[in-house]
Every structure is written in C-alpha cells, then in structure tokens.
Amino acid sequence: MRKKILRSVLSTGLACSVAFSLVACGGAATDTDSQSVSDPDEREKVSIALGRQTTANPKFPEGDNYEDNAYIRMAEEELNIDITDAFEAESGDDYNRQVSLALSAGEIPDMMKVASKDEVKELYENDLIMDLTKYYDEYASDYVKELYDSFEGRALENVTFDGMMMAIPATASDPGTSMCWIRQDWVDGLGLEVDGDGDRCLTVDEVREIAKAFMTANPENAENPVGMAFDISLTSQGSDGTNSINAIAYSVGAYPRHWYTDESGQLIYGSTTEQMKEALSIVRGLFEEGIVDEQLGTRTWDDITSLLTNGQTGVVFGSWHIADWLLNNVYTLNNNAVFTPYAVVNSEGKVNCTHSNSTGEFVVVSKKCKHPELAIMILNLFYDDMVNSDELLEKYPEVNDYLNTGVDGTARPFNIEVKSNTYLLDEYSKLKAALNGTGTKEEIPTVEEKSNYDAITAYNNGTGDVTGWCKIHSRTKGVDLLSYLTDKGLYNWVTPIYPETTNTMETNWANLQTLEEESFIKIVTGAVDIDEGFDTFVKDWKAQGGDTIASEITEQVTNN
Image (cartoon, rainbow, N blue to C red):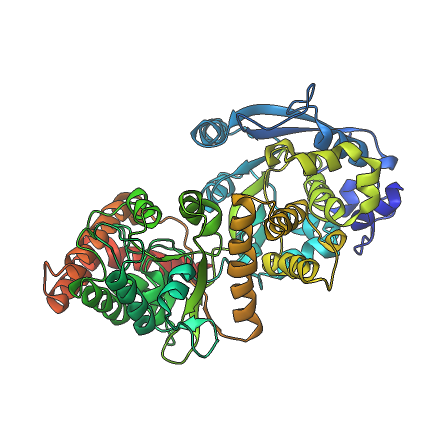
C-alpha cells in the first residue's frame, strides 16, 4: 500500500537508489545523517519542528489537538516522521509576532508558514531558509507540478530569488471579473428587457439604464431609492472588487491600484492613466444624474448592505461569491429576491480582467533543517495523495471524517491551499453535470462541492434554506458565468506586476493611497474640475513618492 500511496515520491525521476544517501543527492546532510530518504521505510524516524498557526475553534474531535490529530498521525505514519510544534499561535497578529520573534532571533523552526513575500525575502537575505529547487525538481509529484504549472510560471516566480526556489507557495486562483448583480425579480415584475441578445454581458450604458429604471419604478416603495452605490474607497486592487467601480474602470481599460507594463515596456500605475480619468468621468456622470447617490463620499460596506436589504437598490457589483456572504442578507429579509449576474464589457465586447497575485502565503524551510525534502513529501501527501487516492482515505478513515466535518485547515502540517488556477471551474463542471443529470454526485471531487450539490438539490426540491439559495447564486449563476466567459473566449487578460514592498512604499504608500481615495471622491462628486483635479492628483502622486516607487519597482523587475 505505501508504495502506491507514495507514488508521488517514487515516480518522478529519482536517480537516487534506495541506498543513495542525502549527501549523494546533494542534500544538507551531516556525516551522521547520510541515510536514505527516497523511501521512508528505509530510514530511521525523523523529527520535524513546525511553527504552527492555530485558530480558536479548529473543530477537533475529543482528544485531538494540534500536535496529535488525524492529519498529523497520517503524515507521521506515511512519511516515518515525528512532528512537534516549536510554537503555536492564533492566526493573525499573534502568529505574525511569533514569526517576527523567530526571525529576529535568527532561529526558525524546521518548517513554518509566513504571510508575505516580503517575509520570505527577509528570511532569504538573512540566510535563514533553504533553497528548495533541487528538492522540488526531484521529489515533487507530477500532479503537484501540474498545479503550479497551471499558473504559467507566476506562482513559482513569486518564490524565486536569484534563480533559487526559496519557499513553497500557496496558490490563489484567478477569481474572475467583478460582476453586475441585478435583482431579477424586479426585472420580471417591471417587464424590463435585460440582455436581449442573451450573451450574459452588458455595457456600462445598459447597466445605467437598468439602475435608472429601478430608481424610477421603486419596486419595493423604499425611501430614497438608489440606482447604484459604491464604497468610499471607490476602487479595489482585485479585479473582482466588491462594491467598487472596478467593473466600470476595467471596461475602459483602466486598472486601478495595479502595476503593469505597457506595450513599450514602461511601468504603469493604473490609477494614474488617462483611462482612469475616463472611468472617473463616467462615474461622475452617474453621480450628476442622480443614479449614484449623493452619499457616495461616505458610503461604507454596511451602508450598501442596508441599501440592498431595505430594497433601496437592486444593482450591486461584486465577485462570483458575494451571494454567500452579502446577497444572503437580502434573501433573509425577502425570500422572493432573485439576482442575476452579468459581465460588463469593453467597446469590443470583451471582458477586461487582471490575473490575481497567484500566491498569498508561503511555507519556508530552515537552512538548518536536515531533511528539507520532507517538506516536498508533505506537500505531495496533502495536495496530491489526499486529493487523488481513495486508498489513502480508506486507510485513514479519520482523515476522511475530518474532511467531511470541516476540521480547520490549521490542523494540517501546512495551513495553505495548493490548487490549480482553474480548480474553481473544474470542480464546478462536475457539480453542474451532477445537477443536470449528465453526471453523479459521486463524481464530484470535493467535499465542499458535494455539500453544495446537497444544498442546491434540497432548495430546488422545496426543502432547502438560505444556504441552497446562496449556492444556486454563487455556483450555478456566478461560477457558471465565469465558465461561460472562459469557454466563449470573452476574457481579455492583463498580467499585473505584484512587487515586493519597496523602501519608499514603507514610508509613503499609506499617504499615497489616502491621496488617491480623496482625490477620486472629489472628482466624481464634482468638488473639483475633472481635468484639473485628475492632473493635480497625478502630479502630487508622482511628487510625493510615486515616481520613486516606480523606479524602485522597475529595478526589482530588472533584477529579477
């Protein structure tokens, strides 16, 4: 059984024989530690110390804890290791403080998670972490490599310094475009025609007309109806920015808060372009027409949620999953509410969209770790074998129970997610097939998607609740739209640069962001002339550190 389960360790071009030592393989072995590691059965048990990120409610069954739970027991058995925690701290500031203390002391555990590329860089520059290049090349399974390769090099580039892979990255798939979610029950009740050509896409002008019609008709007789509302920050760095003007900005080729290069190779900050001025001009027109309400400069997330739940607005911008945590509030107060999402297109009928930062968190391995290859073996076990091997879950039924009962991911040795860039669409395709009868629930690959199937089926059968409503909207509408845009080739992808924090960013970036937000609010509310206001913003932004930051990022890109 072990040989089959550990296929990922043994199948990928290992030139080392069972008797081949760590020294011969190029590992960081000592004279007393030159034993075989290609098969855990052929060596003595190895101790691994982790920096452990915890949570207040991990949902452990009675008797289990962070050092002794189903995931840890499986890893210890399969890899012949003994896992201990060098430190434990709750996610957030407590954990980050422990990482900072370890870094300051120059002593880090064998393996630990860090939250940012900046921390990886600092660890690298202080010579505290291991180059994992050869271990990844030799030990990573084909499946794990395919997951990273799906990001077209972006994921591994984020952990590469001077040509060396210095961390194991968690992956973050592209969330897709910011959608325009429209109250379908209002559309039906008012007899409006939306998306007459059935292409599931709208222009900004079409969105404007729908919002105006909702305001005029006021279907729920609400006080002070609003066509559409935006958060006070206006823009978001992600293309799927909820309650932001991103969908409008992207439609005219503006990519606020993003760094990218133009056709000539020059570095651009998207909030300072002529396209951004055009986007602000459009929003200003909506404001002057009264479609965007007069409280634009003070609207918060909670305010916008209240507008939705009170029936004051029926148009909201956001990601595919906002039904799960934002629109659900509308349904809770009005179970007749139905939304339909649409993509907002550019003048050529395409959906401009930015690739997300493909990594978000990282696992690093101490320079002093005697068996760094075990980090890759753990990676294979949890992100290949546990996903793809039914035999593994049969051997460890308590692990399967963890998956079904939602024990928190902090219980695993590495609290990261490693999935393909297309996993959302891939998993949804199986859910869709099961729902329409061309597939089965058993063919759905993940516990989460199977749970979504149950919730949707129950709701469609009249026995469900708000969960089913949410999953219908987020999956069979939201993700389905992403799948449609992909299948139809309607995306126009832009690949931004996600820089490391520069010296000037550390001192000036917060002020520059404040300058941007305040300037944009003044422009769209008519407090300043649009041409003069935007030109002044760009001039001030450059003078207050923007140009220096651009130079520093250019140097980063050149050096990398």
